[in-house]
Amino acid sequence: MPTYIEGIIILTCINSIAAMGVSLLTGFTGIFTLGNAAYMAIGAYTTAILTMKHNLHWLPSVILGGLLAMAIAYLIGIPTLKLMGDYFAIASIGLGETVRLIIENWEPVTRGARGFPGIDSFTTLPVALTFFIILTWITFNLIKSNYGRAFKACRDDYLAASLLGFNTAKYRILSLSISALYCGIAGGLFAGFMTFLQPTMFDLQKSTELTAVVVFGGLGSLSGTILGTTIITLIIELFRPISQYRMLIYGAALVLVMIFRPEGLMGEKEILSLIRGMGRRGEHGRPT
Amino acid sequence: MESLIQQIINGLSLGSVYALIAVGYSLVYSILLFSNFAHGGFLVTGGYICYYMLTLTNNNIWVAGALSLIGAGLSAIATERLAYKPIREKTNLTLYLLIASMGMSIVIENFWVIMAGGRFRALPPVIPTYPIRIGSITISFFDILVFLITIAFLTGLEFFLQRTRWGLAIRAAAYDLRVAGLMGVNVNKLISLVFFLAGLLAAVSGIFLSVRYTLYPQLGFITIKAFVAAVVGGLGSLRGAVIGSLILGTAEMLTAGFISSQLRDVVVFGALVVTLLFKPTGLLGKAISEKV
Image 1 (cartoon, rainbow over the protein chains, first blue to last red):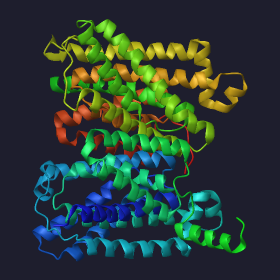
Image 2 (image 1 turned 90 degrees about the vertical axis):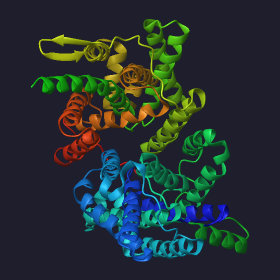
Image 3 (image 1 turned 180 degrees about the vertical axis):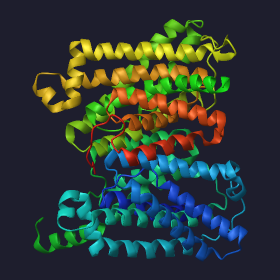
Image 4 (image 1 turned 135 degrees about the vertical axis):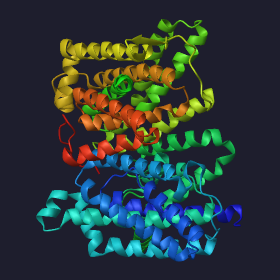
């Protein structure tokens, strides 16, 4: 079993992977979601069922969980991504709650509301870090690629992007599918970390948290997302002794950030470009 | 046959509770164009004020009810002043208001967890819930009361919106808040008034829900279903919100009565997805644009 500090680092890695998925969707493609915890749930339960009932090794199980979440997101995305703005957000709440309710009521397979116990504890610190580093590297490359630019075009001006010949519907569905893949993998790792699953772990509060950390870190900044996730995970974990007040602090923090720094911690900038900017400023001796 | 009629009456009663929530939520949406997730907090605040005032006033429901409505209305104004006003003065992006409203919803819920504890509380039996028989049908007196009081409040709201100067200003602001401001409407006062009305209606539903189920800090979660009703009816349209609520309440009770009570929420969200697919703006709604 991992120690307490290791546990916090593992949890930060898992939350960051899921938040990167949401960041891709909300921060880079401009689709506001409140249901991505559902894809974590799909990944987590798939992993749990494959490892426990079918004796599959955990690695393919986690990846299959991610792929299943991705496939479901693709199917859900085709009709629902025609919706814009608040309508998709509220539809995503509905889908998220539906997935949770199905898991809760499909007792023969998911063991229902009492929870799924006794999953192998496979998510050690090296495993979580490896997944985190690989997926972060892929995401940074993805947003710099043609696909990343197409996502941003959909976000900045949906109409102009489609007039320029981008198949915006396709990119929106792709973005949702990739974000579901990330959340599914994060869910699988979460199953291996907690060794016990319950449908209420993936409720609206979890979905809200995923979107909140992305906004908190800065929409359109991947390093901001990771920084935001780290800070929020630390706040939630470190204030556990005063558990009555920690959710109050978390809620108040969200409101205060929106009032005083609505663009989030990083705005649209990445940490690396900020450091490079500082170096350049040093060379010329004056701010640029 | 009797059970069908009973379930429909149950459904209309539940639907009218949803309508009280959905109308307030829709009212705020029509002015500020964002989904106020703190709305459930107003409902819970109303419920708790009623609970504590009942113990203070020796179970006088009229005084406790009135104080609860006013208290929840004031809490809604306070929420707007503290959290939303600084943001809407700074930016036009409603996304920030949306996130702030989620923050406020967590703050209000946990405020009551700290103040009142997380346990379930039942209101003292101040509202009669005995059954009455009409022919072979048994219905709860409470269900009829809920339905009638809801109609009274919604008619009052309609009268206020259609026949008073402030009502006219609210209707104008629903078309265009900025232009209404340019025409000399005090926008901040108007938004406070709208939040007061929303909080007041939420408190009425909060009292009903505390009697129907029990009172606990997470009771506000039920507003999600009222939001769904508002979207099914068409975001920003008050009539749509009422129609959507009645449809959903009835559908929910019919599912609970004839199929499975565990599927009732799935049916609600399924109705949402189906409505959005075939009529994305809801039954009576106007189109909105992307906000990120």
